[in-house]
Image (tube, rainbow, N blue to C red; front, top):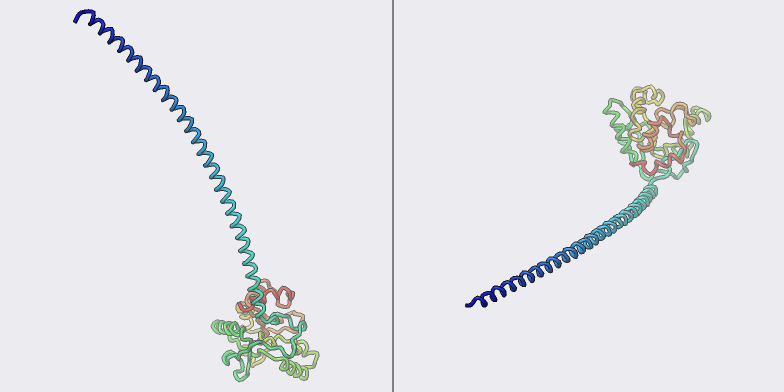
Length: 294
């Protein structure tokens, strides 16, 4: 091969190499530009997506918060509704109890209210002989009061105190007959100081008893000086019994033996407050009627 040919080939190679290098550089620059463009577009798209995600999160959080508030409001309304239903239910229960409870049981009868000759407790039970001072004497009491009286007399006995029932339920006619005897024996004026007229006696309710203890020869006088009376003053309220005519009352002479069942709640409040049954207004007393046997 001559020198001209060789020189021509070398020139061609140089030209091709230069052209290849230019083309390669051009392609690299083009690719670099496209990469930069894609990176810019990707960054922009990422920012848009991030903003959209943040906005969606905010919207979702707001929606959830509103939902919680709505749920809270609904729950609050449901709570109010349940409270109202509960109040109505309690009222219905109270009215039902009152409809089954004798309204006379907590009335103030001593010279205040009157019981007619036809009134009698719905059911009376005989007091067992071991609880009576005179075993041969028939004594009856309101059936719902008897469990309280039995527990009280049993508790007294366990405490070493002997307490017995001397008198319990008396009908209208029995009270009339007894008052007549007292008038003959003591005179009307004196009899009126310690004995109620028929229709005004708490004994007709069947919730009242005259209590006695040993050592008095079967008499009620002097009961206030006995251990039995002291025990009753400190404990009878626990079973719902209170003295109707304590010292200084304005109805009758002091009758320490005369105890009336008014229910444990009222008796406890009277004891704790140092008040007497007849000191209270009748409207205040009536509030305790619904729970008298609870």
